[in-house]
Amino acid sequence: MSANTVPTRQDFPADFRWGVSTSSFQIEGAGREDGKGESIWDRFCSEPGRIRDGSNALVACDHYHRWPQDLDLAKQLGVNAYRFSVAWPRILPQGRGAPNEAGLAFYDRLVDGMLERGLDPWATLYHWDLPQALQEQGGWTSRDTVAAFLEYTDIVTRRLGDRVKHWITHNEPWCSCIMGYWEGVHAPGGTSLADAMQASHHVLLSHGQAVGLIRRNLAQAQVGITLSLHPITAASPHAADLAAARRHDGLRNRWFLDPLFGRGYPEDTLALLGQAAPRVLPGDLDAIATPTDFLGVNYYFPEVVADDPDARHGGLMRTRLVEREGVERTGFGWEVSPQGLVDLLTRIQRDYGPAAIQLTENGSTFEDRLTPDGRVHDKERLSYLQRHLAALKQAMDAGVPVKGYFAWSLLDNFEWAEGYLRRFGLAYVDYATQQRTLKDSGLWYGRFLNE
Image (cartoon, rainbow, N blue to C red):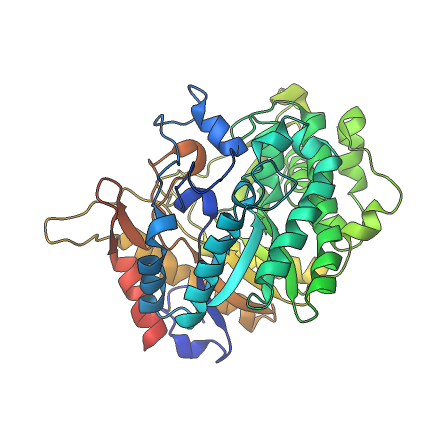
């Protein structure tokens, strides 16, 4: 299939999984209801200057109260899978201890609602909303948080595992660790490279240990982890830029992929990290490499890298990102590259050979407007969706074992440090009225799935 051909559902296998993705903090709201504890993102939002529009997610999309209509919307689209995340502070307000029954009961209702509508529940255990009480004890820099995550995982999988068969341990460790503990742009807002790398090790360790725990609790469970990954190219064929692209790939992609697939941390990246490298105890790497049933991949854009001896953060990677001229970009400024999806998926298959891949997020943000006729004519997102589905089919035709596609996202929502300034949804959300309106992209996705 060429990149210019609009695919049909019949172009994909009959058992292919079609879904939408959401996350708890971004849509649920009810930030102080029914015993929910404070998360690191609640605290981050309360600190002046952290969120671009000064907003918070205490209400967000009010999904906590409006979940039936949101699941109806997903059913209307024709998806057969629904990816959601569980809010750790809603289950364990202090991160550990006795579970909050009201929080568990909410996810009981939500999962039952999915099943009633023919939606296969895909649960993500950690989508960045760490209980603030654990952060005050070191957060992911502390090995104790690994133990706390296992306690939380045990509670949730025992409660929901009779109905939920697909589990994702973590969403995008790069964002929760590197952006959260080093770059300072995500919660908890840290600026220590050593903290970020130790956090990333503990997140990966908690994943590996949780895989075994989930399987002991649920014999038929399918378990994986989701990574944000990028195809990376050098800005020029010069040796310095080629080496820079390799360094960047070491931290961006291989730092997570290599240990998950039994190779340990990449030696070249460890050498660059020096004293900032994480403390790894005997047995840790074996646990991280516990085989999974699938690898979740979130794809948004490629990265072009040049050598930069004066790069930020002390010049660790000595790289800078270069923006190609004359290319299409989303409202976030991200390059639109369906070919990048092909390149990324084929590289993962070639270098790591996962048993299966789920494309757990793929989407775009543009300046959406609700028109007087009650429509959202998001032609750019519609084109983005069509071209990336064509690219997905191209990768599958090349032998990449992709088994499912989850569009990000069902709803416009709280977009982390951007607040409500960015809209990724297939459905437009009027935050003043909480009315949902399917955009043209969502209407097309529904036709695609129902034809």
